Amino acid sequence: MEELDLRAVAENERHPDKIMNAWKELARGDVLRIINDHDPKPLRYMFQIEFKHTFAWEYKRQGPDEWIVEIKKIKPPAPLSPEQKKKRDELKQILKKLHQASPEELGGVKKEAEKYFKEVEPKELAMAEQELIQEGTTRSEMKRLCDVHLEVIKAHLGAASQRLKLPASHPLTICKDEHKIIKRNLKRLGRILEKLKAAGSFDKVKKEIDTLKELSHFFLETEKHHQREEKALFPRLEAHGIVEPPQIFKEDHLEFMAKKKTLNEIAMAQDKKDFRKFVELLSPVIEFLTKNLEEHIYKEDNILYPMAYETLEKEEWLEVRKKFDAIGYCCFAPADLEKKKGKKKRK
Image (cartoon, rainbow, N blue to C red):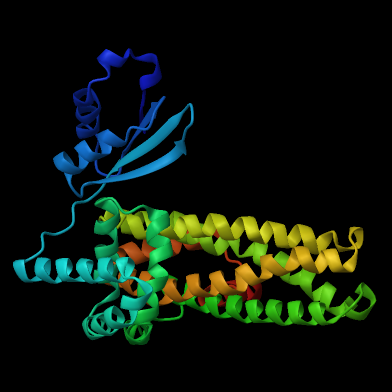
């Protein structure tokens, strides 16, 4: 990683050409880190004009006194045919209309969008969202607005996911199998909360409290699931020019990890609080996880994973699986790993 600390450079000597030339010298996959005393946003616009879709821009710190941004050189996407570009632009316009529609207009816009979304593949949707972000929509705004168009296209997204017939040893199968276990435990978590709300004291829910502690540990362990995605799968997508979707999922992971830690802290300290206060603290955390983590899993199963399967080559999946094994698993060991362990024991 190359680093330029502009804070030590006089204002009149901070020429964009120096930064852009330093970036040009990077090999694909390398990163230029810039440290500045103010937001280098104008530089991003210059990169968009000069380098278009061959860079990934990520803020690591955003002020007030120090701004750090990392600019990664990525593989440019294959050029679109005129027909593909027309479809991409139409999709972006529909997404914009969904985002901008007033409550009175939303019903009509949704009906219009449904007809179009019947033929939209997950990768095409993700790339349209990426272009909107690169054109100025913030990631936080895109995350919020995703809920609007996801509601419209849910009926059509599942088809691409169901078409994926992969072996049990494939990284995507492993992730989806883990998702099933995570969703089952989210349902258990929701049922426990309902029982706690109906009870009046710790004495009436001793069994549920024990299960809550067990589940809080389970959800901390699921961090390995996110680590495998971030360290093995996402870099491969970024190398193919798919940058923004992984960044949005990473931000979700950070938010979930904070909530999981809070869940564990509350569960393990239940004896230090009165029962009513305990339930008050616990309720918003469990409600957040059961709603948002479930939706996150849906988006991964039906958008991220089909898009990844369409994008990565066979040899790349072998490398992804090696990294999966090196990081480890949270909920279960893949069947082929269990067989290997069994053979070693017999020897």
